[in-house]
Amino acid sequence: MHRREFLKRAGVVLASSTVLSAKMRPVAAAPDKKSKVKRIGCTTVCFRARFPKTRPKDYSGSEPYLNLLDVPDLFAEKLGVHNVELWSRHFEDTSLKYCRKVKAAAKKAGSRIINIQMDEPGYQLSSKDAAQRKSSIEVVKQWMDRAAACGATSLRANTGGSAKETLDVSITGDSFRQLAEHGEKIGVKILIENHGGLSSRPENIVAVIEAVDSPWCRALPDFGNMPTNFTQQQRDGFLKKLLPHAHLISAKGMYFNKQGKHLTYDIGACVRTAEASGFKGIYSAEQWSPKPNPIDAVAAARAIIRQIADNI
Image 1 (cartoon, rainbow, N blue to C red):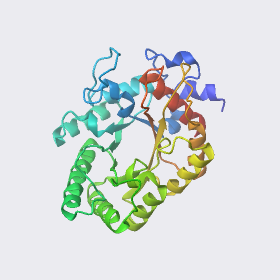
Image 2 (cartoon, rainbow, N blue to C red):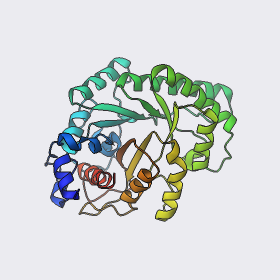
Image 3 (cartoon, helix red, strand yellow):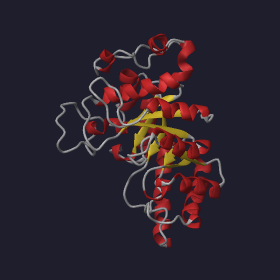
Image 4 (spheres, rainbow, N blue to C red):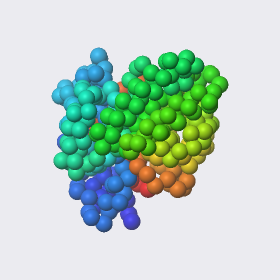
């Protein structure tokens, strides 16, 4: 099908640069085209400047603050997606009661919470200190319980450690084994992303997943968390090591020009690599960059979503 025809009918994003305006709303998806929309989501990380805890001090925008109860409606209205990923730093309340409210807000919008990206301080799953590791495992289990209360089927936790260290799979693997066992009881997979520390190397992630040997411990490949000098071939090679174990993909974009074109690497090529591997799960759009972009958060998210839709 022609790309413009699909985007018009599926309500993902129009190809025109005018669609980058945050004031425009996507067209509702036609019933026979919803299969692609079902495979696309977005994370609140894209809108970090709209949350009190993560708004940069030098931010010059005037948009009002968000809370997690607002997000499902925002994603449905502005992005046309109903798979919602949450960043742990955006929880204004970590009680299970509040998490259930988030689940209800998603349901009301015809959406669902798919994953929590857990980046709270105070846990170290690769610690050689047994007491520290034990307490870290308990911290992550509590967040897995919150994920379950939100209706999410997974939670991403960091391995910790240093990229310069050698992985001790007996330690890190045991941490994730315990988390996978807890996840099986509550219906929440524990995910490992290439997200710094020991997880900077795809071989380490694979080693931990294979050591755990459970469908409740899977990978979350991220398109962007790789050396900045990587060629597209190297980026694809990195992803190919993780894709056989992937439950969810972080379809990250970084820098865009004013027309909404992504400049850092080829997002579409990354999606094609994932599709060729047999991945059938959800791509969660994410934008992260140390420096500001010339387009706003809605425009960036839409640009990433368009790239996903064009290539699945």
